[in-house]
Image 1 (cartoon, helix red, strand yellow):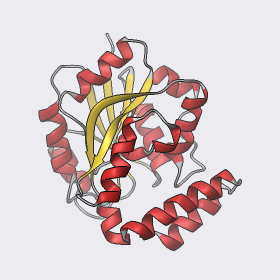
Image 2 (cartoon, one colour):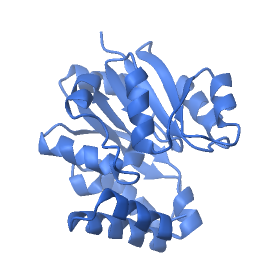
Image 3 (tube, one colour):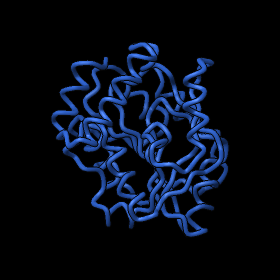
Image 4 (cartoon, helix red, strand yellow):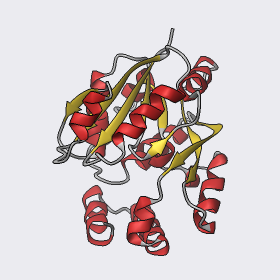
Length: 229
């Protein structure tokens, strides 16, 4: 029987980690979840303590989402890996929905996503995620993938400090290994609030275009550090 390991990379998430872990426990419906793994990248707040209090398995690793998620995958004992950002809340019965997709032969995919915002652009951006178009994908939609497939693709490319999610998703699309579960995951608009909606969207597009024209992982990281809070 398939089982799910939830893997959450964190860095200074004391404001939201308890709520996320409570949400995962109350919105899951079966015993399919094998474990919830939090991989912390060196928080200097109470993230680790709060995650432990909520019952998660907690590990520390070198900072960087790709490195943290790969580390979590190496510790996972479930046959399905579910990568989730700390500010994303999956839908009710998310575990059963993922399980059924895998049982039906869909070895990787995500949920459609909406922001917790009424801004028309963010509502449109979220609405577009229901379509199985590679251009509409992103890490905030979460990612489920069988551990076998994840290992076959060598996991996340740790050269990337940003763009790591898109890099792996692109590999999945090339092998026709991706499906969209038509249930809503809700994600925070906090980065848009901090940076400004249009400014942040411009810089995200710039990163995608730079990668398209051959920018290295380090060049993308330096651009991110310079322009995005």
